[in-house]
Length: 316
Ligand SMILES: NC(=O)c1ccc[n+]([C@@H]2O[C@H](COP(=O)([O-])OP(=O)(O)OC[C@H]3O[C@@H](n4cnc5c(N)ncnc54)[C@H](O)[C@@H]3O)[C@@H](O)[C@H]2O)c1
Image 1 (cartoon, rainbow, N blue to C red):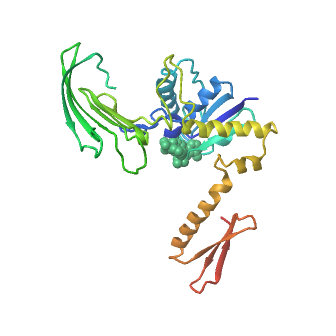
Image 2: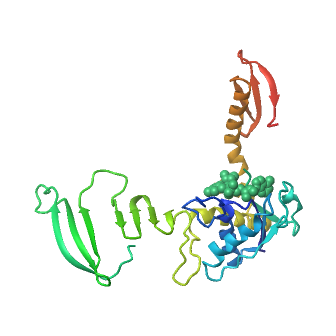
Image 3: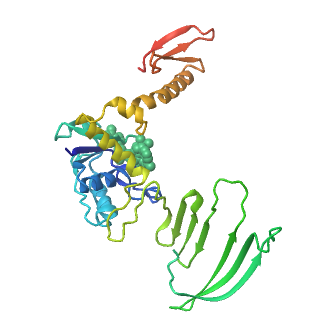
């Protein structure tokens, strides 16, 4: 049965809402969590979607952001959601506890603190050969300097192409780079490293990383970012919750699969960070991390200079 989703924190990661002149980060301009949940609802995996923030008065603007960045962009995307607290509440840190609705929610995130000028005519080409490959009558590398004319408006463009048939032992066989500087913006592509960015006069800089989150709709206008890891991290979590509820998977199955970040995984790192904090607070005294038989950190013990316990605490 589809689950209801409660999203906590109407900020950048959930809603793409960043009320500064800089706006949301260039690789997640429309946020990640709400967009994923709306799409999962469209696909029948999610039922109700609720959004809660500490601050109600920002919610009308958040809904407007969601509508303009998601609802107006993707075909068939219903962006309706139930918001808490009410729009006139300035600040309510307890709002999340007052959310009403079905008891089984998934709390996803506690968010506290191309070159487009077509029809070019080929005009001139200058070929600059690189080294001649010993033993074979062919170049290792060639570079072409070309000029193009746009058939529509007669404007000229210059392009330099380099192709190479040799490579040292490197990280990728095909280093494909592309840089286009046009009258209204530029596009840079580093295909080997899946880097793709653009900057335009009207839209500013954006890092288009389809491996993380693809925001460009498909040719029919539908959202098409289901394979990005930003989307998958949330979709797999919701699926795991459903399957746990239905008895199709157990927590130990999920632990063994190792795809989802579980609390136990983060506990080890949290213990180190907390030990560091306490050490700093104690003027640099050593802090010992104690583990249980399963390897889980259970105690932080403040030591004195002679390595004697002087205080015991259990993540208090
Ligand atoms: N932005 C990202 O790219 C990104 C990516 C992965 C994870 N995260 C994590 O997600 C969390 C949120 O990041 P963000 O960038 O969206 O932050 P943000 O500052 O843009 O948004 C945080 C939101 O949480 C609200 N909030 C604060 N206290 C609250 C409370 N007690 N109850 C309800 N709402 C509360 C704030 O009013 C704000 O709207 C952080 O923990 C961050 O590390 C962010």
